[in-house]
Image (cartoon, rainbow, N blue to C red; front, side, top):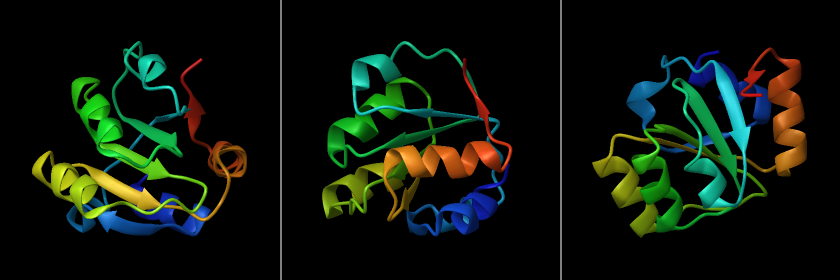
Length: 114
């Protein structure tokens, strides 16, 4: 699934990474617990979270995750955006709950990790 398709499905807006709209992701994972994110061993993943702080970007960097959706109408801070830009990460802001965001993406064909 391409990032630009994800934007349409979840009514998202790009906060960082406009140049990567044609990137493809195969799976999704939702968590606010960054220690769970660190256990993932997969590629082409989009992380769905409500944790909108620099720690999310640092964790995604360590886990080699380049695509992050901030659910629950969370907004990225300037510090978060600066770090995400430095790491060439895509940040999408989404107005929906994590549950609804995951459901919409799953119904549209995004696969779960497990």
